[in-house]
Amino acid sequence: MCNSAFVYRRTVDKEVLEFGVSGVLRFSNLVMYDRKTQSWWQEFTGEAIVGDLTGKKMERLAQSLVSWNEFKSTYPNGRVLSRNTGYDRPYGENPYTLYDTSQPFLYSGPDDRRLPAMERVVAVEIGEDSLAIPFSELGKNPVVHVSVGDKELVVFYRKGTASALDTSSIASGRDVGAAGVFDSNLDGRKLTFKRDGDHIVDQETWSRWNLLGQAEYGPMIGKSLSPISHLNPFWFAWAAYKPNTEIYRSR
Image: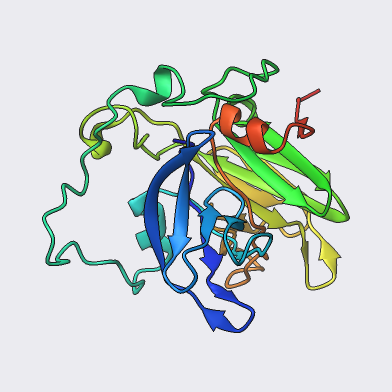
């Protein structure tokens, strides 16, 4: 279990695929199958690894794993999936109590000790380049400017998001925070961000930005930064698939 959300465009070669769960784990990560060809797909990479579509990849879409409060304050009219699915599911409950302070679940693979196995990271991949930014670094500096590939990026971090893998009640989990990754260029202009008390502001206009990359106050109000596809996995999971990744360290 790698503790991350994956969002892909499920159209492959102009075919819209429907997926199910194979029941197989690889490096503690889910393996899916598509119902059209029965090919197996690695959730972490979005790539078919067995079957007729082996080698095909789905396009990963940008997303952020944030608290409900952060989402509803940014998108008050946003749509929410209903729990009334017709099936009995214990939504809001965590069957893996204390998982994120223990050891990787059913994991057999590389052991990269540059970071603790269960360290949460913000993981970004652009082209052949990849970077992992530990949450422990973001806890000290919640605004980080980095370059990955040919992109100049900014990472925002804010406390206030509960761990889904701590206590049996997800809402009661300890605060691990959340992060977003964005292109730091907007409308042809490079912006430089910093923390200002409890807020994130850009130094060019002193507009105030939220965790989802939207300006909420100041001259830039209503503007949105372009989100960058990223993951928030545990370190062991990212390192297993991206062994050559760099690790961000603050100076």
